[in-house]
Amino acid sequence: MLVLSFAFVAIFGSVVSPYDPAAQNLMQAMQPFSPEHWLGTDNLGRDTLSRLIAGAQTTLIGVTSILLLAGTVGMILGTLAGYFGGWLDEIVMRLCDFGFSVPSLFVALAIVGVFGPSYGNMILALAIAWVPIYARLTRGVVAAAASQPYIESLRVLGASPARIIFRHLIPVALGQVLVYASADAGLLALAIANLSFLGLGVQPPQAEWGQMLVSAMPYIQEAPRLVILPGLALTILVVGFNLLGERIALAKNPRPMARRKLSLRRAIFKQEMSA
Image (cartoon, rainbow, N blue to C red; front, side, top):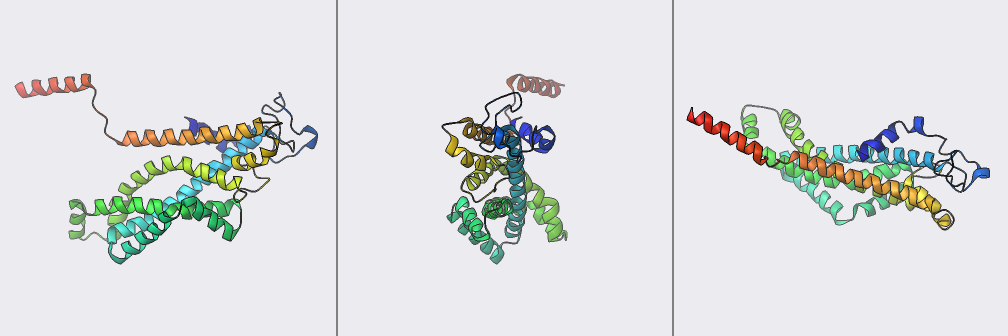
């Protein structure tokens, strides 16, 4: 429900936003809560609520783009490595080992440092840093599925590798990747905020919660709400993603049958056996 609320705000942000998030009005700088500005204004007179809404758009678009890029590339590499094995598997896994040996955020920092700070470069950097995670996950799932008897039967019957991969292996791996991605989205939201806080991600005047935090730090004594509100929004979103990932993971696991339902099924089975 929390993630859906943020998604609604991100999709319809331009409609529900009361003001232009980049519009400055120095005559109304640092205004407190009021009917005109429900959450006040910042040091440049920009409406805080409008910037929080724009920050939700920036964060969710970034998280979605990173997951699509990293998940797609990682699934392709992991599927090829898990199905064909051999030298291809060795190359992909050694590259993944190298990626795991360095923290993902450090890899993203290095890439952004090379290409320069911007929103697009940040998304590309984080996607590259997260590719080994999905490649390793997909490789394990595909390698296990490829050894199953029904896959061997398909090979004997003459099914092409492309048909086996796209019709039978990728759908199996996709479920596991979606479960992991739903829980990983919270980490990516934090990574976007961290890079923007360091000045290597979203650049002004584009609104983003991490960038809003660093801009408000000089005014924390005068207007602590400018720090609390974006931090609270980021915390709620991360908690929402974690709850969503946990719920999806639990939904894919078999649930124990309720005692009443189990007793009813046993009674029906006994009646059928006695008949």
